[in-house]
Amino acid sequence: MTGRLHVHGLNPTRLLPMLELSQALIESPNLAPRQPISAIRREGSTTCLTTLFWGLTPPWLNVLDHAPHCARAESLESRSMFREAFHARRCLIPVTGVYIWKSRPRAKQPFLVTEVGRAPLLLAGIWCRYHTSLTQFNDSTALITVPANAWLSRLSDRLPAIIHPDQAPSWLDPATPVEEVNALLTPAPLELLGAFPVSTRVNNPAYQSSDCAYPVGSMLRWASSQEL
Picture 1 (cartoon, rainbow, N blue to C red):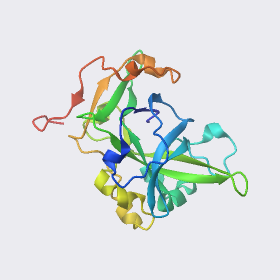
Picture 2: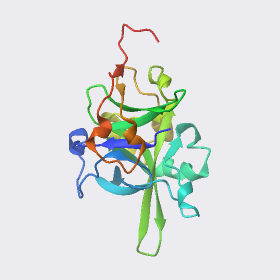
Picture 3: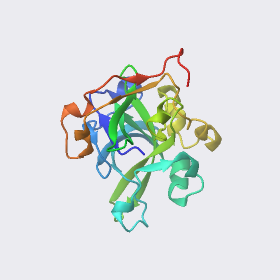
C-alpha cells in the first residue's frame, strides 16, 4: 500500500495546459498521509489546483486516524465511504514518484517508483467535503489503488492508479459514465514505470531531505525482450 509520495520540481500545467494555478504546488521529497496535498479537480467549468487533506474524512468519521489515505478500486462501488465521491468528486494528484516497501527477511527495503524517464505522473483520487459551519468546510482526498502490473508486483501487490493526461478531462468530469471511468483504473503499462531502491531514511516521515529519492541501486525496469 502506498504510504508516501515524492513531489518535486514538476510543473502541473505542462501535464494539463488547461489547468488554472490559483496557488503553489505543495512539494515534498517524502510526503506522508495526514498532511496537505495538492490535487487537480473540476470547480464548475474550471480545472484548478487546490489543497486537500490526504486522508478521506467524510462528515460521519469520528477518529481522524481512521481516515483512509488509499481506496481500493475494487471497493469504490461497494463501500458507501467511497461510492458518492467516485461518481461525482474525482481528482488527480500530480507526483514525481511513489514510495513502496519490499518485504525482506530482516527489514523492508524502500523503493521509489517513477516514470522510467522521471517524468511526472497523475494519480487517480477521490475527494469529499466536510462542512464545519454554514460557510466553512474541509476537503480531503484518498488515492485509488489497483493491482501492480506483472513486473512491479515483485515489489508490491498494489500501486496507485495512473491517469494519462489525455484521459484527465474524462476522469475529472462528473458527467462521464461510471463504466468509462472504471475502465481507466487498470495496472500501469509494463514499460511506463521503473523502481529503484532508496535509503531507509525515508522510513521516517519527518525526514525531508532531497536525498530521500537518491538511488542506492539500479533502476528496475521492464524491457520488451524480457520474460515475466
